[in-house]
Length: 109
Image (cartoon, rainbow, N blue to C red):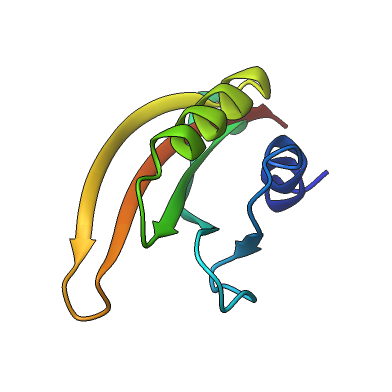
């Protein structure tokens, strides 16, 4: 299964549209995601043993997204993703609240 499919599967129970990179929804809230780094995290005998997929999930909302963020957090941990960092933004030009959630998934080759 690809890393994108793993993310979509992990977030399947959340009642918010989820899309790769750009939203297919015109209504808020929605979630987008992408891989911002794909690199070896373990080598042995000059071979890549484990690949680390560093992914970012973005929640976009016109209102408080706290409950959505809790659901994303729990869903990603349940799918064996490792929390890296979260931060909050506000997009002044569109007046949209933006939650950034970064995770790591290590996959054995």
